[in-house]
Length: 577
Image 1 (cartoon, rainbow, N blue to C red):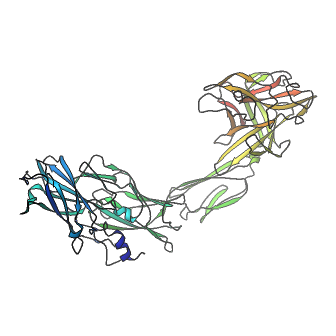
Image 2: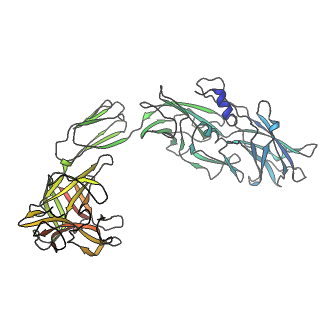
Image 3: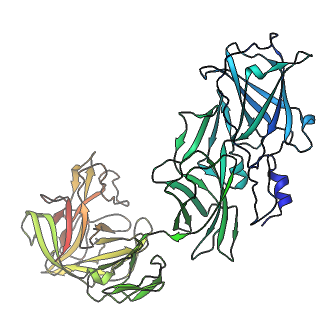
């Protein structure tokens, strides 16, 4: 803990718990000094504290509000109907600060007390204050408090006197006395973490809130009354200090004392982990000018942990179960370890464990091998020269996904490298359409790219002809596609191959290339193609050549083409059988 004397020198002008000052009652207007623009002197006194704020456990000494010699008073002259008739700012006479720094004089030379004013409301404006003043109101935005100094800077100190109590002395000076006290309170937290060490600063975020939303995160005062511009919501603040040995964080928050803190809670975010605890104060409402120590041990916040892993057996650290052990088929949690067995089913699989405290663990095992096997391919088929399948809409093929013809790393037009790890048969005789399954375990997404290779020498011999798979290209309009299009393009550019990427669905049982039916669905663009307008991929197909060369001279027609708009579906897709 920091030395108390050092802290006092830094924040003595704003730190205290002071007695609650009541609002002045409405009084009838009284005669005011007749001479306009006269000097006004207000003697300001800070109220006696009912509790001192201590920063060390069981500390005998605390802190009280004191004048430093640079404060101001924000005055409002208020009528009988509580209307603000005028405002004035008074500066402090730094030579007038008393020995105990609890009393000082504030003055101005040109005050005019408006006719009809019955009382004077006053707010103390400290140099480090985060309170703003406008139109006779004081506003403190409590929604974010960065440290203990910042919390104190949000305090509102208020005082009031009747105009009838303003006197004119023998020198013609208007004089008055105002006693100030706090309208806010402090919550000082000591929060112990169950499993990690807290961190000072933005890495540890603390939030105070409640289900009834009865906590103000912005207070705007007009006199003693809350103004309609005040608002409710969570208060966010950060630790002032930590003790890594005890895993305890200390933090301070300034709050509106009159709020109802019933059913309030503390939520803490630290390194993407969540913790929570009920506030459970002994008093639902607080007293202004007091400090309330809140010592709590946080609980791990119930959380749904969802991960993707490969098909091998494995394990991770898991603490959300709070010691509860559980097993579901191939997934189990024992102590603080979650483990799973190898997936040999040939399909992706998911297991879910639900714990008593509300936490959930969901593990999905998925790998390239899980995409191999028998699938249905649904598409719209066109038949051209040398077609092996008649035209149909829609058409369902039964295909087999197995090993690729060639598995080698290749770089696409954007500079990304891909390696084909599957091969699809059943679309055009015995021809194999290579493809690439790519799984992003961190993002929990998967995609399948069909390898459309029109390089010379890359074709496959089928019934005396050479076959190549190619992308169909079209021109996109606003939400669809139309003429011109080309279904015989075998010269894609550099490189003379591409992948047509299908998205794997959430159930992991199909992958789809969607038809462009709305503005938020975009076709894949063949970036390297010579035309920058007719380069949207709307399907794929096969072409035949007498030689293993695929150019505009050797290829003038397609054999079969698989278009991405089969009737009754959102796109063409592969579905596991």
